[in-house]
Amino acid sequence: MDKLTVSSSPHFNGKKTTQNIMLDVIIGLCPAAIASVVIFGPRALLVIAVCILSCALSEYLSRKAMRRPQTVGDLSCVVTGLLLAMNLPVTINPLIAAFGGVVAIVVVKQMFGGIGQNFVNPALTARIVLMNSFPARMTHWTAAFDYSATADAVTTATPLSGVMYDFSPSSAPDYWQLLLGAHGGCLGETCALAIIIGGLYLIVRKVISPVIPVTYLATVAVFSLILGRDPLFDLLAGGLMLGAFFMATDYTTSPLYFWARVIFAIGCGLLTVIIREFGSLPEGVSYSIVLMNIITPLIERYVRPTAFGKAKERKKKEGAA
Image (tube, rainbow, N blue to C red; front, side, top):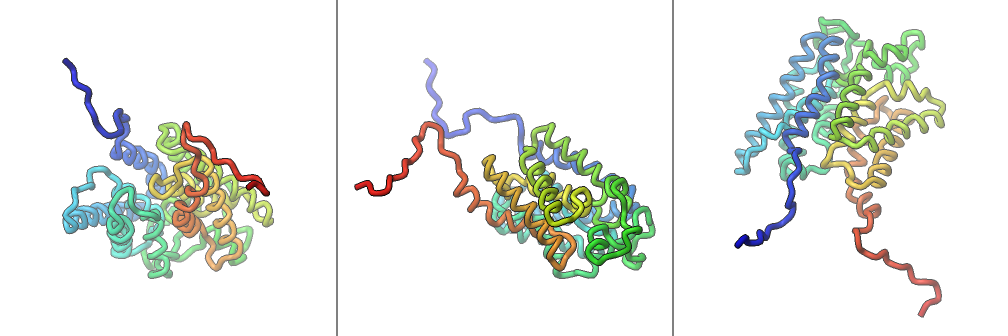
């Protein structure tokens, strides 16, 4: 006689695993990584390798020191390292890049319990720490296709900094240059086309929902137009595309529910435009996403849908006994 098996949920396991999802994210980031090597030369590979290795080593050593099961094999540390590299200039000192990897993994991720427990995006938080610790090194940009890019290379402006400091409009990149990445900037924020291709891959593979990136980009476009800026320029310049597709959609730090995601993305877009227009920094994507990460639990608390089969609470009428 067959016996009933009693167990806790889930009773059916999906085909997707953490490793599979992270592998898809890595594949989605490959177009941007390849574009960065084409635009900035072989040194981009060095920055990417250092970030990935420092993140993987930091995860291995921290998990070993904390006597926790190893999670290097789920590839989440590789994704963090690759995202961190995409947020750094090609001229960054490898030691600084490695330090960023330690901050992202040990401080932001493992000290809060590991994957699924961090409340802010590790790569973006590490970038913010590096921006405040090494501002000169983190804002040392070189021209596209200048393969001699080193710490002593000639500094150029990013499109956003050029607009902020009123550089000559004639020297500003046009839309095609922004789309193809023919300008200075971080490794992963220059070629908008490569990021869009990678983002669409994740959507087609159903790794991410289009709700957050579409709402985020639409919000930036609307508020940019309201403030008299160039919406298309704001969409293509800076780290907006990278942030919208690859970092605002992080499973751990973004909301689960539809309307919570919409509110989250609108907040990201609004803060991004406000920082770009009124802040002392030309870019606001990193800060906007991290700030919205912090209030994600609050958003979900008030936008949580009613559970299936549960009656909605009726409001008491005024004057009722």
